[in-house]
Length: 392
Ligand SMILES: [Zn+2]
Image (cartoon, rainbow, N blue to C red):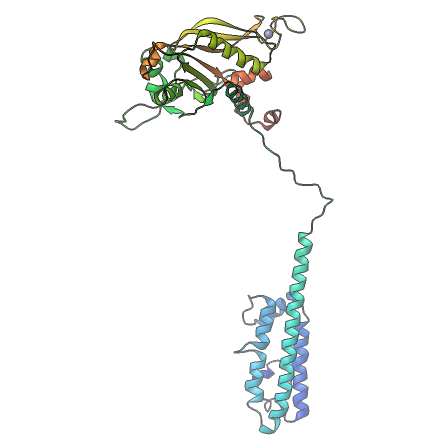
């Protein structure tokens, strides 16, 4: 009895098959072989492919099996047509044709069933994978919050909004004209030593030097250049000084400056505005005072102090001794301010005889440190989540 291996490459005559019985037997063998293969799972088919070096053995096993049997050029059915059907005596052609058609429809049906079976299995596996186990602990995505500095900015802006100020913002890279000269700080003025900053490296022949602004005051000038009085603005933003970092210094910090200019602004408006702000920010219980001071762009200039928020202005520590925050003074220095120096109006074409106003500048980092009892300015810039999380 001939075996099926390589049988389809030979004619039935060569295989010794010459009657209907032999035809039925050899077709039964082919069919049995197919049935064994189609019953395999994908791994089984893949192994078979490797063993027998099937055509396209790198393709998916199901397609490969289909090609092996139904492939147009060299599939088993094509070989049967060529070698058995076409090259047999006319007397056997009818029997072979009938057997061939039965085999063909059997193979097509079974392969279609197999494909369906495998697809369902893949789908079921995917469903299992996607199943959600509600008893598992959830993935926690931490929700961020505004940085404390940003929160303090927001609070200060809200206080000044409530009394008619608006916010303007401007460039951090400035010209010496806006940062110094227009603010009545000419070159070689000694105050420039206190405000030394970073200069930008520029190519030879650049029209003007550029620097990182040392205060947000340049925006006061830019605002007055653009806008006639009345002006009521605050300018929040980052500023830079050439300071070495320590607990109270940083080469970059934050300021809010304020400017009010109108035809009838007096020193009383000025102190009233500042006092309103301080009480809103630190609480109604605090006291304020001002001391004469000096700034090139205000005249007269003052330093504003607030009664110490840690010892209530007594200067004494709770457990005895002196309050470490105000060193026993009972007062804490808050910020500088003053009436705008009339010389500044000359730079922006305001009539110094008709307008007056006040300006103030406060360090946001310092205000936040005082309000929340923070000892070291560096923590604002270290991005330690343990610190940031305390101010959600
Ligand atoms: Zn104190």
